[in-house]
Amino acid sequence: MSAVAAIVLAAGRSTRMGAANKLLCPVDGRPMVVHAVAAALASRARPVVVVTGHEAEAVEAVLPPGVTAVRNADHASGIASSLRCGLTALPEEVAATVVLLGDMPRVGAVAIDRLVALFEEAPHVAAVAPTWRGEPANPVLIARRLFAEVMRLEGDQGARRLFAGRGDVLTVATDDPAMAIDIDTPEALAALAARDSA
Image: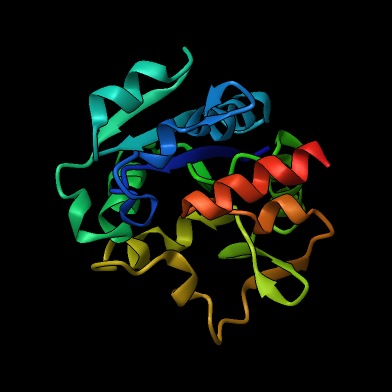
């Protein structure tokens, strides 16, 4: 059985959230980033690597035990540098990694484990990419065979741009709306709270 890791991207500057660091905003009484990290820890994925950057000390202070935190000194350049940091921190025996976003607090361990299971059933694939109602969703699984290409990305380019036109990317529709909910603005945070209380 192949080893599959998890990388939680938690380095962004939260520019659309105003003065607050969105990853530290409370959701259900816990900082937002803790939900993504807890989901990774509750899944089969190991190790769990958390990439920090903006306000790194504050973010690392709320992380639960059992994770490896790595700091991206170049986080202001965009998501590509955080992906590189996360991949560099993985042990050689890791065959793939699930990449989670720290601002998606409703993604659970079940969603992560489904990606892992799909990869184990088709270990030849370069990635497992979920969709929600026809639109790209997160997290995604990236196999080691794609790591070198991800390492060459620059700026605010995520790994998904590498999936287009490839025959070895497994695209799977999900019925889990949590995989389409990311929190970028105060309005989105308020909407999440309203949805939960409805």
